[in-house]
Image (cartoon, rainbow, N blue to C red; front, top):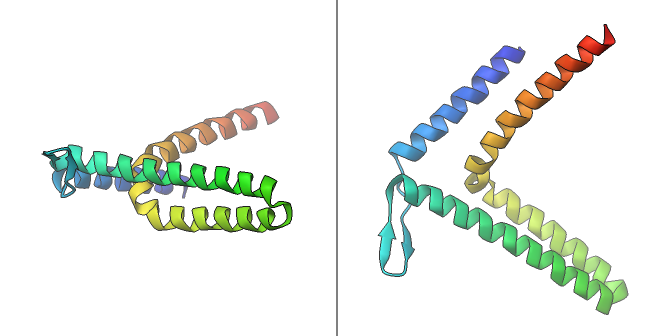
Length: 123
């Protein structure tokens, strides 16, 4: 079962890479220049994900300021802003997937080696 999960993760990552480098339909316009193809797809993903992360941080800072100014209402506002940021991140998550797949693979291999090391220490 563990080998199957690793094979499926690597297969999905290979499909993702193949899709990005062969069907990059995203076009990014910077100034008067259109950037398309695989570079356009990567830039679109990075700009969309970076913009959402920046928006989430700005919302948290605004919530913190409101919590200081309006002590009672600020707690409700910061909770609502954090919930809104989470919902927005879930809606944008398909755009963040290319950034998260390498992290998931690294996390899988690190946890696998850690588990193996713990098993050797236990014996």
